[in-house]
Length: 147
Image 1 (cartoon, one colour):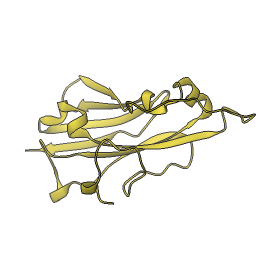
Image 2 (cartoon, one colour):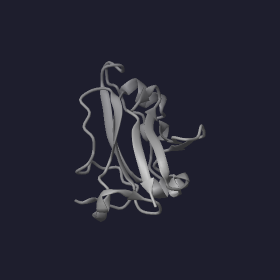
Image 3 (cartoon, one colour):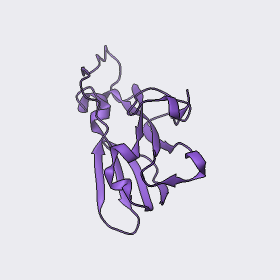
């Protein structure tokens, strides 16, 4: 399924989803149409997370409620933060059933159109974007938005 065929936000694994082998949160920018990102056009961010069962419980059973996308314009100090919370879905912390809460990993995905998700991205410029999930942080990605 191509990026054009997906409705955003989306919480499934897609072709451009990052892969995680262990604990963490990772993001990847899908390649832009036409070779560059432009103001007012989609900027697709694909993300994945793996957290411990203890972290899942700390999030009330919904790690995405604690996952935050952070955006900073490189030439300014202001930072914008938005939660990747799925609305309208039931949340239930998992039952450990004798499993070690700090060893068992719970994972998932998120896919967003940053242009729709973060209105601050409407202006051309150089940005930095990263994701945070409780005490986990992704790599920081540089993002250039042209006119």
